[in-house]
Amino acid sequence: MKIWTVSNQKGGVGKTTTVVSLAGLLSSWGLRTLVVDLDPHGSLTSYFKMNPDEIELSVYNLFHDTGRKKTNIDPRPYITKTEFDGLSILPASTAIATLDRQVAALGGMGLVVTNALKKVSDDYDYVIIDSPPMLGILMINALAACQHIIIPSLSEHMALKGLERMIHTVHMVFKSRKNKPGFTIVPTMFDKRTKAARESLIRLRQSYPDNIWNSVIPIDTKIRDASNEGIPIPLYDQKSKSAEAYAQLLELLLQENSQTDKKMAVN
Image (cartoon, rainbow, N blue to C red; front, side, top):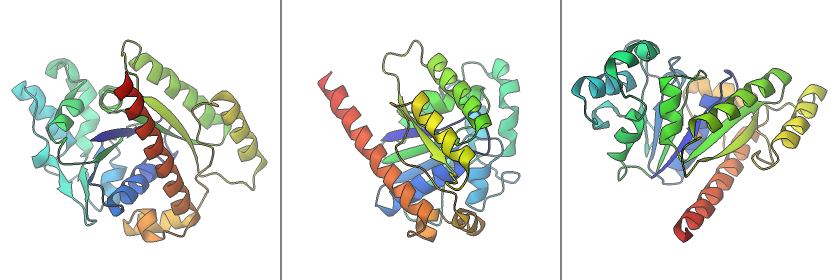
């Protein structure tokens, strides 16, 4: 089972769209896929027409029950199947916004998601985690659980500053870890018509030449239409510009993961 985390410490960069699009593609290609919503905003959960204010079993319960019982919890009771074949979700409730305040009382909560996913390693081929935009126990869990990090970033000045903070966080979290996960920066909502976007993309590629994807996710109104319908864009309109771009991105990620597996096998 492969685990990817989609993360950035700046909101509004297309994290949830990226999670949904990649997961929709993976499941449509016959790969058993689980998405995990660790963002208190619950955007991923809402995408699949679930109300974060009304969910009875969610990521919050997983953390709470793990802390209360002082043992690793089987996450299966908290997982829900979506209407799309091969695609399931571990949803978020708005209560997870309170977890950071409860961590001191619960204790030792940095590996809750890691340990929970180990219990379903035979159930899924891929897990994609939607991380919150702030550093805390949820982001720590999202990063600690994954083997690869996908960092969506807008091509604009303020987004570049947020990206710098995210890269710093990645290095800080994995400072003492021997096998550090790789990361791929994905330029999102790129508007080639604007000079600012083109110049920012050039700076992105100059600053992170070894980690940035060589293409972009273009700005596309079809993404909004797909979101309104609760359908991953590759399943809503596979010929749309963004759907084709996400398919190209997924092919690259699968290729990179295959190469990483080969290197680890040799070592």
